[in-house]
Length: 215
Image (tube, rainbow, N blue to C red; front, side, top):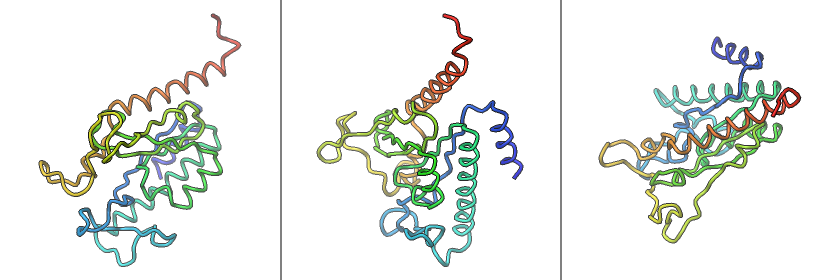
């Protein structure tokens, strides 16, 4: 609660250029299909009830799902606060994440008239495609910044001309799941997002001070 109060105070101060909301998607991943299919066990279903967690979860799985559920609600509250104060916000998660199917997320998506560009990691220097989405409010620059791969034969990347690495199973060199190995944002993608945010901030500043700017 203390952190949320500080964020809301910063938003109200009119000194905030935007809020980036990139919650961990571990429990929301559709790659969680069970060890017999080359991935970690499923924790959530697809219908409205099991989306918040499969029945009979126990131990660490239950703790992780409950923590993620609280975080989803937190993200939605911050998005609503940003909307009321006309502050841009950005909600990031993989394109296939279950986050986008939650009713609270869909509600702000529609009511706030958000754009939802998506970005393929392979277009920013990675060997895997991995598509991620930005639910963006009040930043037209971000909405135009999406970049996707045009698949070739045999899942061939249009940027590298090579077949995408498929993110299933374990990485033999490290022993971790391939989905975990591919979590980090590519630096080139970070630069693209930073540029979109910067250009929007500059545009808003110039619009607000147009009468004071001398060329």
